[in-house]
Amino acid sequence: MAIQNLRGEIAKLPEQPGVYLYFNCDGDTIYVGKARVLRDRVRSYLSAYGKHAKTNALLKEVARLEVIVTDSVAEALALENNLIKQRRPRYNILLRDDKNYPYLQLSMAENFPRVLVAREVKRDGNYYAGPFMPTRLARKTMALTHRLFGIRSCNEVITGRRDRPCLEYDIKRCVAPCVSEICSQDQYKEAVDQTRLFLEGRTDEVVGRLRTQMQDASDEEFYERAAHYRDAIGTVEMLQNRQQKMATTQLNNRDAFGIKLGSQGTVVQVFQVRNGRVVDRIELVADEVAMATEQESDIVQTAVQQFYSVHEVPAEVHVPVDVNLHDREAIETFLTSRAGRRVKVFQPKRGDKRGLLDLAIRNAELSYGSRYSEETSVDQAALEELQTVLALPILPHRVECFDISTIQGRDTVGSMVVCDDGRMRRSEYRKYRVRGLEFLDRKLSDRSIRDEIERDVVGEGEGEAPKPDDFAAMEEVVFRRYRRLLDEGGPFPDLVVIDGGKGQLTAAYRAFEKLGLANLVAVGIAKKQEALYARTVLEPILLPRHSPALQLIQRARDEAHRFALAYHRRARTKRNLQSEIDRIPGIGARRRKALLKKFGSVTNIRRASREELQPVIGGKLADVLIEYFAKLATKRS
Image (cartoon, rainbow, N blue to C red; front, side, top):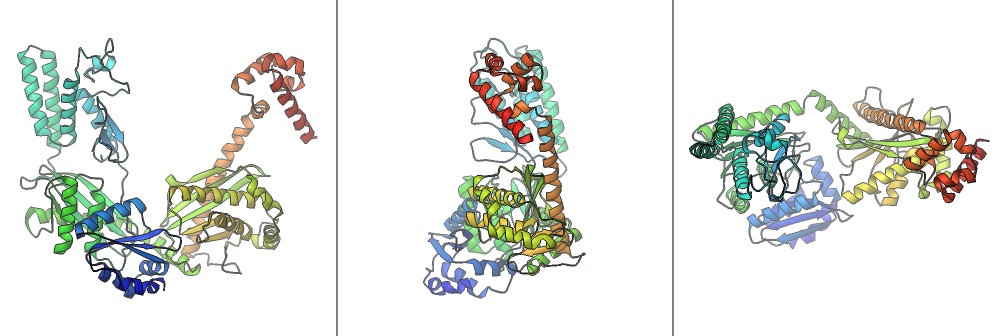
């Protein structure tokens, strides 16, 4: 076992707090952890083999160890958080927001800020509010900021020198900062401040400011403006009353973490309380199990540090487990440094605080039960069977499947679909138009590929051998996919499925070898017999027709085939709708229009002489056009 080779190095580790990093043979960081005592923590891995499949896979893959010593556990926690975000190690649990709900961005980086819809929170100096559930609520709230506070919705560069405001000012949806005589930058800043208070949920302060402005406008006899402030107060108060569903006078700003850790993954529910009201519920999930060396308290620490990397830190954080003193102090120091004020982390035992925490825990348990239902259990059984049948080192959570679609070598396209824990991820599908790259052309005469074709004719069950171009196309598509992933840093699949037999599988492995990704595992599935072909097995693998593993691969293969076929039909239709002159280099829309206007049809253009073409498109392009049609006529004859 690989970890045992580091026994001597582990014995020399310091007895100090810090961060330890595991690397594989390719030099990739595969796990990052923190420790109060580095030697004791890392030494525990020597006896961890056999406790869980994920732990076993990590320990087999470890090739190198590095440690970074810190002055305190708090510094180790902060460093661990930064390294995990930067390197995204494969074996660390990475929680993600389960719902891609939108946020509202108040663009404070601009001189005259706007309210925009954003899909993610970034540390770019802007203020973010949300997420908003349902999605339409975000746009309704954005429209409300225009109507209540006059925040601009345009994309103009505001200088204040515009002659007159636009229609938005006339319909009272903008205070017109583009005309300095109507609205100065200070006046617009007041509207921005009110908008921020409104988005933060501090409606009492908003109402107080609006009442003051209404009274001032009334005293100055600006009754129309006073009426606008009166209507705004009514709208804000109505929204405030709707938010009183979960509130108590004893809860200020705090978050409650509920967690459910099971054999199939982790679900975390975060209830956010602001000004005594539960204003939001955010769900985090990790479709993977924890390391055997990690306790529930470790998962809670991971959830806290990852959650507050992108969210505002409240004054108190309630957790469902009792974290030991040293770790709690480290977390509090970490959060305090982010918030700029004192933050307390503890497990409440009674009262309203405990009631809210129990509610978060119950919601996490319910979400876990619905997420990992009977259907998910079937998918889990399929993944476990696949791991056993193909002798994979880890459970194939992420499966990518490839297919090629063509008719007589024309309009050849490829597709790639993703199956994540048995669920198809449509947002990650990719399609490819095969280019026929030069490095693939030599495959047509490659002896090993030709041998695979000849041997595989009967095994494929198709009646005739596939065209050699299919193998070149498969290698090109696989090569382009994983070259892109290398540039982006992943995520790489646990298993690659190829629609085809030994020939297509060999082509895929050629692409892996070119990229230095020989560690990727691929399997081919041939039609009719539905046999699986693996590189490590000489004979095809025939699984029972009702096998969950076979059905999972068939589902991915059929989806890849559907996706490729749909793209091929669109490509073929587009080609059929094109004119012959659309394919001539140098002939664009303007020259095509001029040619058709002059000659009337493609047939007349083909018959035209150089002297007739030259006044329309010039002598050089006339030669190109004549040569193109001459080659086309030769090919057809």
